[in-house]
Length: 308
Image (tube, rainbow, N blue to C red; front, side):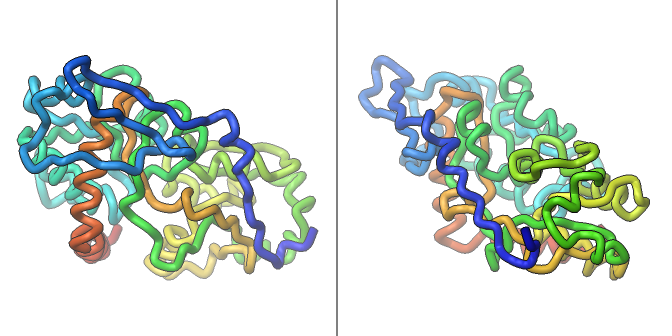
């Protein structure tokens, strides 16, 4: 199989077991909270008066606690990262952090950022240590089956998709998919890229999952791995920022996903559709106004100024 072509990844079959579900959250409420056919939530609620009086589940607990707890991995600029010039909670910055703050503001509660490794972000919802996961989460069918996912709020400008990152000196070693059979490949643990690589590569010597994308890049530069599945836009930004000629994306090798897979999402514990309805209303607001992309550009400039 020649690599110089586009690979269109059709994951529809993975969704066959995921149907439309309707749930009721409070007996006194007659409103139904519904997932769509792809098992994420694309509807919203009226949040003009903050958290509704009939709020139940996690949304009700947020109201009673007066605090919204957000799980994030703060090492993914410009969406979430640490500003070393600041202290305390103010050191957590980025466009996702701005979005989290707006959600808390619309709820009328205080925001608490809970930093952790990416692989722990979603499990924190199961453990009830956090209320929402906001960490540049991609839509993955397995995630949608295990958690409630919002509509998309950030979309790559050119829909660049996902690709394979290698060392430039190794370009001639990869002429077909079979050339990966004796190679060490990698991806970030718990990411969409991990799922794509695991499901679509017929063979490899070893598959390593790293905690962060930075660890993936460093391992490849240091020769500890031979190739990695990455988000193309993020990898291109890294190569440009570092001025690196050591790494490159395999030409014309791209995993393109269907439209309903596009966009970063916010996740909540399974069953908390009412909470995601509230979140979606805030997403509607920032998409209509263009506010999220303004935050993204500001965070991008800040990250660059900090050398991130």
